[in-house]
Length: 229
Figure 1: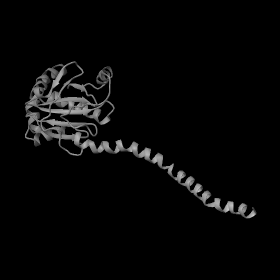
Figure 2: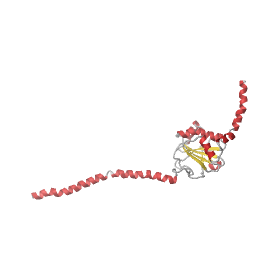
Figure 3: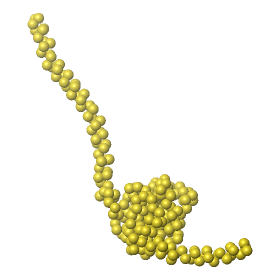
């Protein structure tokens, strides 16, 4: 009896070792579950950029189409149709009220729209904003050109989805994209791009389109000099 009693612990040793090994294996597998969950969660993040070039083509400098179409409601209740502005150079400016560089370039874009007969501007607000808020913003930052609020979930398909703001397209008189700018622009850049694409040079545009203003200024000088005399 004593020999059987002593043998029992020895036989149980392999079973005990197997049990311990099973516990250890189970413990090693638990940390893998969060990693698997993280990997599953990371898949959409990894696939989104991969799908973007085919849909939005942000990796190239070419727009979605060479001759974009744009027909959109503006905040003043009118409809802006890009096709109706053939024959002029149109600046299509993607911007947002929270974008400081966008706000900085608005006065020059507005001046181009007002002072250059061959240039027009349209502003496309790429943000989620209510109409009253946009109207209040434009009271503080007025512009001469039409403004439209885009649906950020479904922006105009003819243009690339902006990679950053501001993003500006220069559309030629033939309706084709003449140039594209990612980042701030000013009047000089726009007019140089127009001249490069075969349009009026800045000096030519200034001499031909600001003559009426210069004439008015010249006519006003005698009237201003009379009281001082």
